[in-house]
Image (cartoon, rainbow, N blue to C red; front, side, top):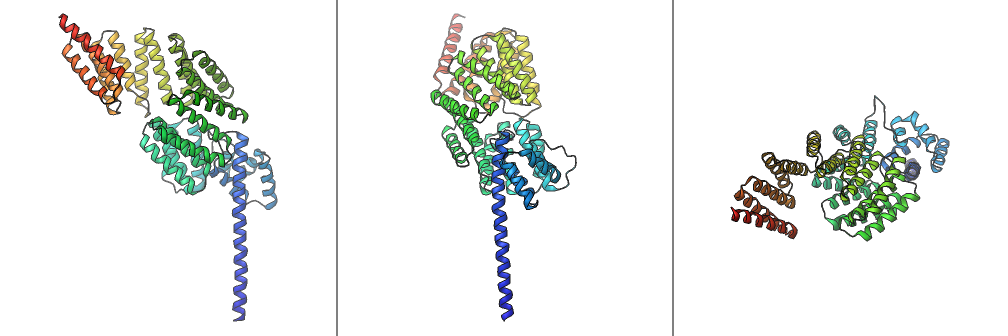
Length: 493
């Protein structure tokens, strides 16, 4: 009995030692993860388009460092704390090249990956880089590979986040919101709070695009609070810029300007030039919406230069697109077409397909306003061919509307009728009532030009019925004017 009690006592001591060692290791890992995430993120400024270094990657690096001898651990920890990140990268390169690639912000170039966990890590790194570069084709391919692998909760969270980005890119807002909510919940479960804030920011963007402004604001506020508690200044500034875009959508321009200026100051202080330039682009767009062309032009030029210095081709292309919009608003269509072509070049290099099509449509509109109908039609056909190979959220209906207007101007009424009907089919499919009513008005104009007054009246009646669903007084006035013209023509005949 005495030996049994002694054995039990020894076992209890051993268990207590194991418990305290495990607790120490867990605390040490959390400390390392926290410091690695903050210091690596601070060293690189922004990691693959994110306002922070991901906890998932910090944990991978911490796991490897904790396997090293105590003395080496201490040296590496001090090096990271002093933001001497290349020393950590050099250590990781021998142990795990993929983790070293993650810490070094480099795409993994290993041809063979032997461990399943390494394969998942490599796919997540390349997905982060693909999102940053707007390369959704690569992202979709990698997600198919990721879906057949066994994932941890953190990896499942990233998978959900990437699925949300793809759904948003494709214009499927319901799927995008569902995946973003799933990502936020999973990130919260694994205590990756900055990533949770990132998911809330994405949700805010989704609801803003859907014009559900109150929910969007709530999402942005939740993200900002998490970033504030996590002391991630870049994240807070990014949310401020998103809220600025929200106020801009609601035409609350003074509040939007204040938020953009505040966001710009933070990015400038953190020396994040391309993020600052993105905010300046938004200030240019805001001034354009307010018809303040001089400050809009000034902001767009400054942003383009900063993006050029920061080697951010996508941001530079967006500046060119804004300059095209400013020129178009001032009826300088030659300059608008030139800027739109520059934007297309940038978007092609950045592989941002929806933005490329927007810029190409801007060029087509400018050419149409210059009365260069053949060139405008060629531009529209190029957009249609381009869109056929890619699934994006770009509204194809407006291309067919412009083709209809071109044919109408060239008096090819048969082709114009076909184009307006195609546009109408797209708008009805997507529930765009105002645009559908405009297509009915255009069809009525075509029939009037052909002398088919009864068909023109029928289309105007359909337009009036469509408009009544949402009560657009301006469009009602246009329909009424068209109807009066038709009645007058019929009376004269």
